[in-house]
Image (cartoon, one colour):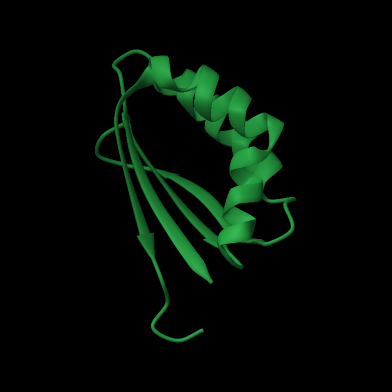
Length: 96
């Protein structure tokens, strides 16, 4: 299993547009084979800060996720103009 932890800071005034994209992305991603967990969170202290926790069976599942048409639509096209910063971290479990 591979885990991804991604924190997004959204440009001011774009928070609800980003939240809508994150909801759509979640709906699609959860149906992927190899996706064990896909859950977005929003900071209660900073409406511009979002966090997604993702779990995949393996690297092939991550690559399939990134090759999906909706990934290109949301992550590569619609989201970048709204994002101030992004921090992606990859983790492996201590035991599988």
